Amino acid sequence: MSESGESFNERIRKRWSRRAAERRDGTFGPVPADMGADETPAPSDRGTPEGRARVLYERATEAYRDGDVALVEQLADLIPDGPESEPYRTFARVQSLEAHADDAAAAAVARAYLDRIGPSHPAWDTARALFGEVMVQALIMGTVPLADNLAAAEEALRKPGDSYRHPSGATIRFEAEDDEPLLMVLHGNAAKAVRAAKRLVDTEKRASRAGHADALCTFALCVCAEGDIVSAREALAEAERILPGRPRIAATRARVESSPAATMRLDDR
Image (cartoon, rainbow, N blue to C red):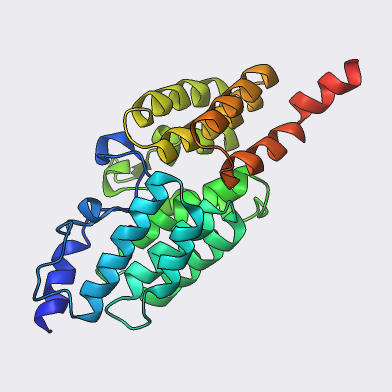
């Protein structure tokens, strides 16, 4: 294996994750620190395909944090094809699609990459969690069917610690939803989802504008599932003040306004 390949194996260790305990900023998607990479490649590494791809990916992540959706897309398109740069290209493409609120396409790209690489690939854990999170987002937005996809997303989000061996010999598996508010909604546990979403908003408001706005969108979906359309609308109005024109906000508003919580209020007038 080449030296650059070995460094890649060392870098891609941690999962793509939103979970607050595993993140140091508020963005959606993997950041260089999450993958164990130095934030800036060494000068000798910048000329390699992997090094160039990582620089472009890091710039795309910065643009995402700033809410510059167009720049995220441009930088994702600039990352070259090839085995060394493919993880960064895939993660950036998914990040771009998610920034545009194109959740079904994001889930499709993440699934296709996961299908290509297999469990022995060094990016497997990252890609697996990536797929789980974007698929949950697509499910809650109603852009993909629940059948088969919910189970696949839950499986992708499970960590090794999510199960243990019972003395009887049975394997006990914890639910993957414990850190995922939107997954709690899909399981019908809206009250628990609202509490988790509140914690998420508190965490993300100290990070980036995009993270804060996206967390408010998550909160809006959770309170909407609980039937509180007023709080959902207030959360989206706040998200719009933080990051005007963000596609995620518009998509979430459309989902909220088509919900039973909204349509029942209209019927009551």
